[in-house]
Figure 1 (cartoon, helix red, strand yellow):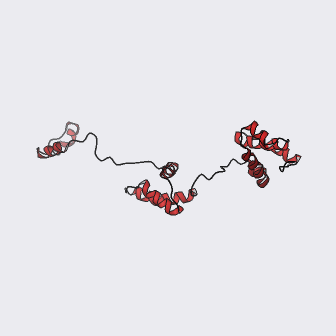
Figure 2 (cartoon, helix red, strand yellow):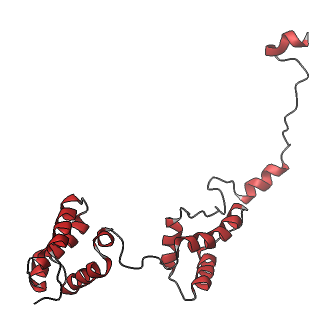
Figure 3 (cartoon, one colour):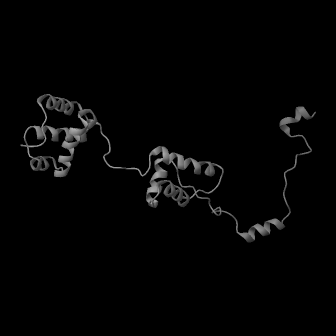
Length: 180
């Protein structure tokens, strides 16, 4: 006798939910529950669905603990972010003010603040993904314009007669009526 037991009403609710859902992952999870009710062993379900045996046992346990509505929600079961998004935004807001003021903000500085807040070391790759997730982009000042003149050309041009723009003393043709 299996430890996973549900009654007929629960089975019908699972079957209806499986037919209504459009998400294939949720559908697959619900099919596993239906197969367990129908008497399939965990190993048989694993062979038919391609899931691991431990995953099937965990799905059945989660259904027992959470109920159908919570089980149907498509949520990530792994911990994807090191800190909550609100904390990430709080850390980045400190650097955003400095960046808008024209100061150079480096990933190394952000990593140090992030590690301090988190209490342990974080990889650089995670920091770059964090910046991308929150819409930051890499901006690097160019040390020199690619078409800039050489230093000798700049010095030689300083020795030439300076050209300035001065207003004309004569009246241009377009304003001849105004000048009289």
